[in-house]
Image 1: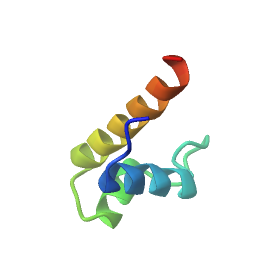
Image 2 (image 1 turned 30 degrees about the horizontal axis):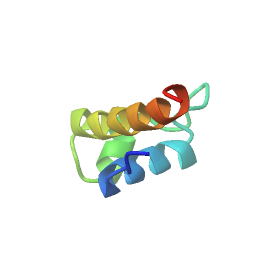
Image 3 (image 1 turned 120 degrees about the vertical axis):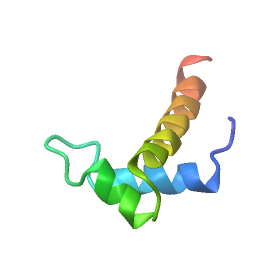
Image 4 (image 1 turned 120 degrees about the horizontal axis):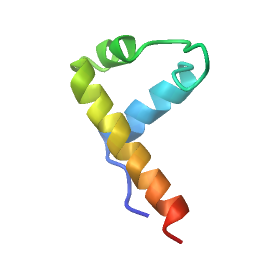
Length: 61
């Protein structure tokens, strides 16, 4: 698998622990971005890159 960068791992871990993937969401992307001291768009870029790597590993077998 393409390894996640430190920022990607942190973004996805914070999302998971913070309830971002739950419905309703336990936290917002804006709050998670603030916890990493980055902009929301940068946070979502890290999160999407991590998701893409994980999904590629699952579905490209």
